[in-house]
Image (cartoon, rainbow, N blue to C red; front, top):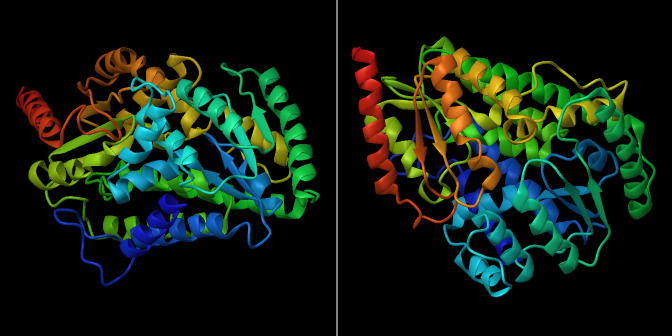
Length: 423
């Protein structure tokens, strides 16, 4: 369990008031410190669940976490945890090597290889339940085949239809009935509808606050620095439906409102407004600090922060609300279903955020993400009138494209944006 323990310690160190800011990065906000504290406490609850008599459910994507909260089951989103571990420890090589020894090819997503290595080496606790969804990621399905073989525990697969139809909502709704029966059988508890309704209300509040935060990000100047812009996604995927998540979003909203009232942006002089597609180079987060500090560039919106256009959570109709929301989750908008649907969300968000250019991190090993590059690049150029820079990099492995190489690519891109301004 060394990876989990080390990540908890790293997160706790980050939120200490006495800790100096990361060299070259913007000072950590109050909401940033709260994010690290909540995530550290969450991973601590995963670590201590067994001794407290609670089940741990390892999950993929965005399952109905509210059902887990209502049954006092601890959720553990391994994919987000693996990325957190990399950002803090900067060394997932032992886990990549363990995956390679087990026969996982290097062409596979590096984060999923790290996840497999963490599981095989016992770097994370064994889960009591496995919850898999079929949406978003091709690599995920193969990764979870390995988990199904490795972990001797009950598992449930939630099948998400590829395209949006009303009969698809009913299909998911029927599966949620089955999921409730599955969770009740293995937890020994009956679903508490009052707790479920309360958890759904927390989710509704999170979504409303997230939309408000996105609107403020789209302002000029944009008030949220690029490092902290991706934390809301991790919070939603890990702790949606909890009062802790609500408190984080409220604090982030308050922090941004204060900056907006003072007329302060994320950088002193905002020169470039960027729309970010796909993930971050977690081995080189200094890239974000560098382009803010040296070039006045800010990520004003990102693909993973795209939310459904309307509030779909009705606490009075809990399972139907959860079924409908699955079609329009931030991950499904970004990576699942027809490209035209995703493109509509992306171009609208880029236009509303007044983005001047887009950056697509073409994560090597992400087949489903990279197939979208040309489609989105053309749509952003034709419908919004902005160019897209492609970084052929990796979330985890710096040998695919180093920090220096990414900086060189971005400097060239800023020159293109300058020429467009001059024209």
